[in-house]
Each structure stands twice: as C-alpha cells, then as structure tokens.
Length: 402
Ligand SMILES: Cc1ncc(COP(=O)(O)O)c(C=O)c1O
Image (cartoon, rainbow, N blue to C red):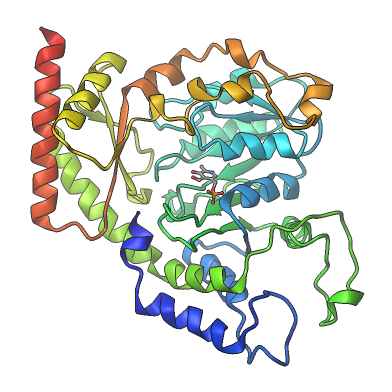
C-alpha cells in the first residue's frame, strides 16, 4: 500500500485547508470557500502527473470505471470485451450500465491479449475494457492494432496502474477514456476515490455531468444549472480530494522507489529454480506496485503458497483463489444472481458464464503470486524477504519435483 505508507504532514495540511472553510462540497459556495478547490486541484495534479488533457475526480475507482465506459459511449445492449482477471468492479461497471460483458483471454502480461480480444469480437462488440493489472501495463501496440482494425472503442480500467505507461504514454490515455482507483490500497489513495482521464473534450464533459446528476456546472447558481444528460451522484468530497491531491503529488517518487525495490528483487530471484516473472511490455513504464512471480504451473505455485504460509511470510496475493479478482470465484456473476433485474437478464448473456473456456487465463493466474512492493522497505527488509522467498520456493520446488 505505498500511498498510505507516506501519509503525513502534507495530507493533514490539505485536509485542514478544507476544514477551515467548512465547505466539504466540491461545487459552488464561491464566497465562503476562500478559493479552496481541492477536487479541482487534484484533477489538475492528475493531468500533470499522467499527461492527460482532462481528469475528473469521483467517489471511487468503480464509479470512475463506470463513468469511463459511459463517457466512451458504451451502454445498454453493447457487448464489451473484459478480462476474467481483474477486480470485480470492472464487470459490475459494465453490468450496471446495461452493457454485456464478454470474457476474453489474458496472457503473461496479466492483461487481455490482442489475440484474446480478436477472438472475442462479434458483430455486437462495441468496445473493450482493458484492465492494466498488478501495476503493469498491457501490450499496447498489438492491442491498438486490433482496436483500430475492428473500429472498437477502448476504455482502460487502470484502477491498479496509475503511474504506469507504455512507451511514454500513460495507462488510461491509450483509449477514449481511462480510470484510476484511489481506494485505500492504491499507489495514491484518497481513502475512497477515483479519477477518470481522457484527452477527448466531449467525453470529459459527459463525465463531468454524468457524475453529478447531469449538471452542466456553468455559472455559480447550482439550482439554475442545465442538465444536458441524465446522470447520478458519483461526486468526490473535498475532504477526500484533499488527501487525493497530496497523494497524487507523491506518485512520481513512489514509482521511482517501487521500481528500485522491484528491480532489486527481480535480479536477486531471477536464478532461483522455477521462478520467472510476469511479462512487462515496457520495463521503463512499470509502476512496480507488485512483484509478480510466475511459477511453472498451478501445482508448484500452490506448493510455494503453502511454504510461504508455513514460514509465516505475508504480503502476497494468490489471485487464483481470491474471491474478488478471478472469475473462478464469481459464482454470483456466473449465475447472474441479482437483487433486482439487470438489463443483461432481459437481453440474455452473450456467453454462458458458467461454462467459459479460458485455458490461458487459468494457466497464467494459477501460476501467479504477487507481492505488494513497499516504498519504505529498507535494504535489510528487502534482503530478508528475498531470502525467505528463495527458501520457500526452493523447498516447494524440491518437494514438487520429487
Ligand atoms: C482494476 C480495478 N478496477 C477498479 C477498482 C475499483 O476501485 P475502488 O475500490 O476505488 O472502487 C479496483 C480496485 O481494486 C481495481 O483494482
């Protein structure tokens, strides 16, 4: 959780600015707020850090992902290609707007592959929601070729990959719209929050209105504002934005330090039998929030997980059995258990979600163990972790190959 590791005086100062005015609402109240506009400042800082023309802060990464799909023009009845390995919010966002998720294969980048996307395209495909997983990025050149060839709209859920880029272009800016999460576990946190980014003015205007009941935000009299579109309340509060602002300023340092730590661990572990790493299409663009180990197969990965647990080594995720990140555990999605009817139940699912055939995704996620990289690690802590990891892997591999 790198963002929270550095929580300090800067965050407190930004929060106090808001508390002193008492204006917790991001819009209006111009006379009372003493020119304190934290959501606006946070958005400007995000634009600066990632190189976006427009950013719009929201209540969560989930609402930002939903808003990103809406602002890109994806809606009811549209098929949208999604990965089976993501935080479940990506799938929920598509379902909430009436879109029809179509699951496609990922590869060793941990993200949708160009080939996986190509195979999932049907005449009803409107777009792709590409998720940049575990702090890394997808293979963007190959993917953009498929997007352009088939005239699809690309939305990037970069909920876990703010600060990552591919050949100098930030995650979130390859497609029409992109989204970052600012929840408690991310590189920059606001406690709860999210940001949608885009270089498209119309998409930005839609996001701005959609996330606040359709308001056009013109003038300073909220009660008299026009409503160009139908929207809802996905607003961020000034208190959350204050924290998000201070944390966004920290992102370049966090990326640099994370990379130092991740690169050191990778070179230290590279020769341990059985160890390889998730593919990073642009090693210079990694946000390095996770060290992503790939073991030879699911059985050996599970043996390593058992050894790590037995040795009391924590700080890792084995996503294959995780309830929120991999499709194997999403029974409520597979059987479409809903509180009240969703559009997909009226239109019919585009795939039989209970019988999906995604062998490559099963293989990759089965082999994957991800360690959260900490920005405050000392050299001694890094060495202890590497030694513990090597010992657990060696033990598991010996037991596994016998
Ligand atoms: C890829 C991805 N998308 C969306 C989200 C949702 O973000 P939030 O928790 O801020 O709603 C997350 C959160 O973990 C995520 O990892």
